[in-house]
Image 1 (cartoon, rainbow, N blue to C red):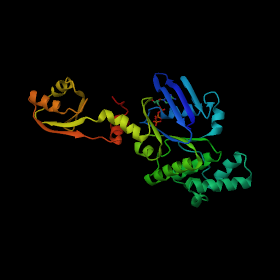
Image 2: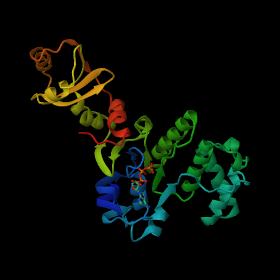
Image 3: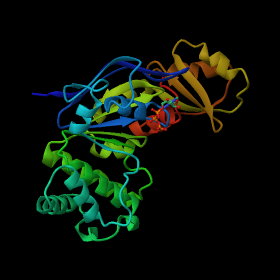
Image 4: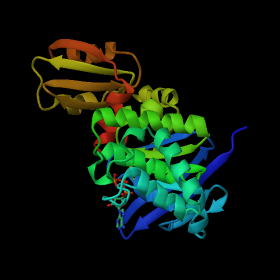
Length: 315
Ligand SMILES: Nc1ncnc2c1ncn2[C@@H]1O[C@H](COP(=O)(O)OP(=O)(O)OP(=O)(O)O)[C@@H](O)[C@H]1O
């Protein structure tokens, strides 16, 4: 049976004139990896801070592990591990020494701390670097140590804000696979934010697409594909020999035309249905010489790049 572990109900966050998050309903299930996907400024960090009880929603309710996050942030902190942008470690101490300190702060004895720290270092694949000073770690290694640090308190949920930022491609792959295996092995619920579709696509069970504070679509990648691609099924790339300034205006008055834009000397025309014959007829009737007419097939990545990455919302 699925159990909701993070639940946002009609949540909005207003900063003066900026609406950072708008009427957000979101339910994340225990054990799943959920990706908050969206361009910069979409409202991902604000949403995460509200889940952690670090900022108060202007409207709506946030529950995490059954706790009302806004009123009980300390309770939430006990159950949720948060990996911030850059975890503050003692740079002059080794990875192992840093983790042992965290373990002791969590109430473990010296012997237990040593044992648990070593266990976690091997889980995050840092055994070989455990005696190296953290100041010498790469960003990817720091993030992995950060994960070990939050796993020390056995959290039910791990939340990460853009965890792969500033890491090289190999490090990104290692971190993403590590997140996936930690979630599977420990039954951890993971929420991570990212502006990179191909990253969340690799490991997330479900993804929510955020644009300008609104969750425009959510579901597994397959569902997102279907939902987002359905609006982009009938797109044609058209080349006209004698195009003039009136072409777009005239064409947009045709019944079957949903949208038209110019790109690199071509027209990209989105039709309401498959009837491309109407397009050819229009050109003929208006004395435009059609040089080419071809169907464009989009992938999810194309749509994300085109309509979301730039911060525009889909029509
Ligand atoms: N403390 C604040 N005061 C005023 N406006 C804010 C504050 N925090 C965020 N905002 C605004 O709210 C909107 C959402 O920001 P948020 O940081 O949540 O987006 P994001 O998706 O996490 O983007 P990024 O990846 O750039 O952090 C932005 O327009 C931002 O400028």
